Every structure is written in structure tokens, then in C-alpha cells.
Amino acid sequence: MSKLILKSDFIDLFKSLGIGNGSLICLQANLSKWNSVIGGYQCLLDALFEVIGKEGCVMIPSFSYSTLDPACMNLYYDYEDWKTIREECYGYDSIKTCSDVYSRSIEHALKENKVMRSNHPVYSFYFIGNYNSDWLKQSMNYPISFSHILKGFVQKKAFNLMIGENLENSILIPAIAKTLNKGSTYIEKAYVQSNKKKVIKTYLNTMCDEHTKKELLDYCYCKTEKLNGQNVYCVSIEDIE
Image 1 (spheres, helix red, strand yellow):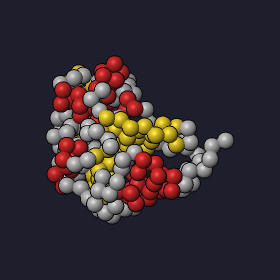
Image 2 (tube, rainbow, N blue to C red):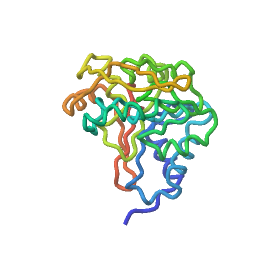
Image 3 (cartoon, one colour):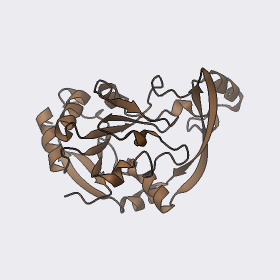
Image 4 (tube, rainbow, N blue to C red):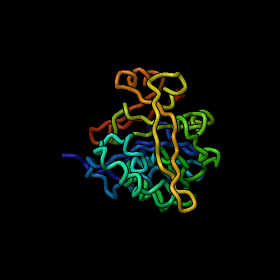
């Protein structure tokens, strides 16, 4: 039987992973299989903010695939429906557009102070805490990169904290792929809400197959701890002490 997971357990876990005051954390958390967490996502985030303090920052992916053109969606629609979808879909709005990933984490993070969302119509991030406003100016082309949205990872000690997630889904992988010119480049199209009108944005992105993802993980430092028998990963591009 799994033991109950308390806030103190998360605090001990984060410290053992090398997270401390002032850390920058890119959080990918899925607690759907962690029913033993007392307080759920609120417990997780409260513990994390207690460890990183006022000088720290948490960023959470808030990808909005609903703003993609139907031709780019993994869930394919009949071609006859594309015109209707393009006319009726909502363009990206940093305040109104819902996230299709990590929504429970974001729901609780929005209650914290100093919360802002980056400007990419599909691959946006929420920032909470002590962040640089330049990080919010996300490039359209190659939206997940160390040159803008993940700039903090090359400026200070930063960690990709993965709870209930597969290591191959690390947010650092597309950024490393862009840096090393790995993977495949493809074009996507999305809609942005601008002055009560929708505008179309076309951009380049990087896609990696499973073999390439595993290859790129070799360029990361990863520390693993177990909590209730499940792996928790802390990934960085610097050595984790």
C-alpha cells in the first residue's frame, strides 16, 4: 500500500534533487496516478515555492493545440470541415486561451503573485515568481529554444522537474535539438487573436523521433529520486551537485 505523500515529503524530495533558493524550475507534473498526495497540486506547488523562495521562478508549459490550423492537428478532421473550423476557432489570447497540457498545475499556479504567459500561439509558457521579462518574448520560429523562452537555463542554475512524466518528454529536448540541428524541421500554422480579429501565424518547429529523443538526453544531466516507488526526474544542462 502506498503511503500518504505530504508537503514535507515534497520539500525533502526537492532538496535531495539539488533544488534550492533562487532556482529556476520548468515544471512538468502529472499527478493523475498519485492519489496519495494530500492536497494534490496545491501541496506540490506550495512545497516547491517554499524551497525556491522569492528569488526563484517556476515556468509551466501551457501549450494550446486548439489554436492550430486543422491541417496541422494530430487529430485529423475531414477536409470538408476545415473551412468551418478555421472560421469558428478562437485565436490565441494569453489570458483567455486554455492550456491543453498541465492544466491542473496551471490552475493553482495562477493563484500565485507575478504570473505572466508568453506570447506564442501554441507553445506558450506561464512564468511565476522572479523571472526576466525578456523570457516572455518568445520567437515564432523554433518556439522552444535556449535563445529566448528557456534562456534562463543558460544564465543560472535551472532544472526541468518531471513528476509523473516520461523522461523522453522533457521540455529541454526540442531546445537541445534546435541547438545541435537535430531532428526534423516542419511548418505549422496557428491563429492569434489581435484587435478582435484573427491573424494567421506560420512558423518553423522541430520534431524528434523516439531514437533522437534518447540520443539528445545524453546531452543532459539527470538526477532521479523515487517517491512512493515512482521516479521523479530533475534534468538540467549543468551538472547537478
